[in-house]
Structures are given as C-alpha cells and as structure tokens.
Image (cartoon, rainbow, N blue to C red; front, side, top):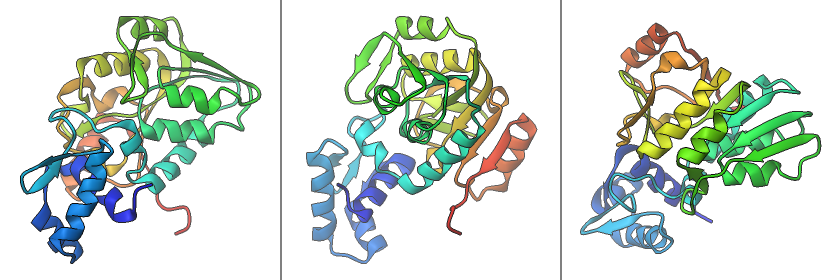
Length: 257
C-alpha cells in the first residue's frame, strides 16, 4: 500500500513526467534521503524507474502499470465513478474500456439491475462477474498483464458486434486541441471502437491526464457526450475549447464539501 506522499509522487510522474529528487525534497520539506526511500519503494515494485538524480515512468513513452495508476488520485476517481454510474439506466448495454477510473465505475455499478457489460478490462470483469442481475462479456484479444486488459483486432471486432446505449472510457492523455490520446496505437484503436458503437459516450478522466506524453490519437472531444472530471486545468482557454467542442463537462467535486 502506497503512502499518501508516494501516491502523490506517482501522480506527479504521471502528469508532469520526470521528477528530480532535490525538487521533491524541497516540495515536501524533507531530506533527499527520505525522498530516495520513497523512490526506491516505487521502483522496487515496478511503479517507476530511477535515473541519476530522479525518477520517471517505468519505460519512456509508456503508461505506468495499472496497479500503480489505481492508487493515484483515488478519491477523485471514486467520486467521478459514482457520478457516472448514476447516469447509467438499468437494463442498458454498456461498453467499458481500460483504465482505473473505469474500474471504479464498475464497482459503483454492482447494485444496478439487468445490465449487459462488454469490456476488455480484466478488473471490470472480475468486479462485476459475480454481481447478481448483470451479464458480463469479456472480449478476446492479446492480454497485457501490466495493464490487465486485452487489445488487438479481435478485441476491436468484439466491440463492433454491439450497439450499446452507452460507453464508459478512460484515456491515457488529454490535449485541448486534439482531444483524447493513448500511449499505444492498439489502445487507441480499441477505445475508438468502443466510442463508435455507443449512443451515449462518457469520458472519465481526472485532471492529471492533461498534457501527458501520450501520442496515439483516439477521438476529439466533440465525439463524446459527457466528460466527467474532478476539475479542469487553470488555463481558461481549455474550458473555452471544451465548450466549443460541444461536450458536456461535468465537474465532480468532493461529495463531502
């Protein structure tokens, strides 16, 4: 289990890229030795990669592991997930993609009735597989153990068999001019197939996803029905561009505030 500071360091790596030990020590008011212990803990578990004087994602240009992502900004993701689950009607067919926020949505759907869930996300299938009144379809494809999902042509073809009431997708990165991005072409193809085969298209992404170094294009914001997030970046031009795209932005604040 990560400490709060270790989870924050992972979030910084995910959203801003490489971090330097001395900068982190100043940020937290701690010694460099304490920060090194945090970094060693993260790297020993495969969540991050050391370099001289700092820490970065495990492999440059790739996402960090699903287990690590699950602990980043978890409280905000859970609030987003519950808000999305409230939008999904009972009796619907729902396509669900990869990502840890999507997994939290699955947890929030366990008490729904008569849903048909189609997913390539192993954790979504495991979360909902024993829930009463739900039918779960797990796609075929190439299994990726670090991401706990499947990708490839077979995965795309399976999603194309359905015309769903709605879909829930995450994203590797967000760009105000481009929209949704993924770290690999295979991920982008699968997410695009999910979006194209659903009427209501829900994007779940917390603020850390903006400007991440993902390069494979998925879809512009105009293809999405609603974008659920904890907050937007401070740059007002981003909110303007989202309004121009026509996507309905839903800010999911703290449920206790």
